[in-house]
Length: 106
Length: 120
Image (cartoon, rainbow over the protein chains, first blue to last red):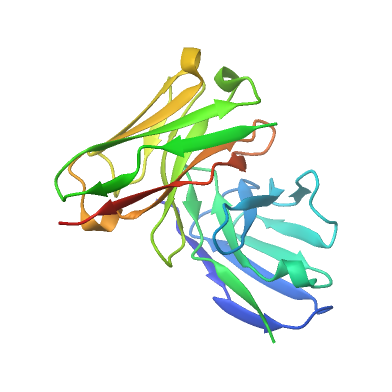
């Protein structure tokens, strides 16, 4: 089974900050990686697929990079609506999610 | 507009069974693979099971293999999850999710979830 490890588990940041979340796969997954945003009481929302492709309607301040085993989600300038929990997901072999990263207000 | 509406959740005793349903609309259901994802209270997301458009390919998480069965009825635009031998650790909000055909296996639409509580 492929394990996904996100870091950090939580991050405190201010509006306007640049935030970076990393995700590491236990084995190579090429570009079979997605990122989701989840707000309390809501279903997850797809942000990035194929490691770096922005889902339609998602603001361009979100970007993804990486391939193989190491991936990054970057929010270039944090907005109030971005405070949420973020998950990575591999799709190379079945599916596995990372444990999540909570982005909190500093 | 794509809509996924889950139903069938509730309170069930350990060892009993439950069948979840997901009614899909707003897209050509039989063109897409579908999945179930769950989230225990206060915890992260866990993929449960997935099924290809024609039911020819099916997968399960190790935690549910042998107890849960995924199926679909393309004529009814519906996805199902038969859950047997339920355990306390199966307590979670269960989401139905549509696979993104151009998206390297990602999930582009999700339902709002149905809550399953396993307790005596």
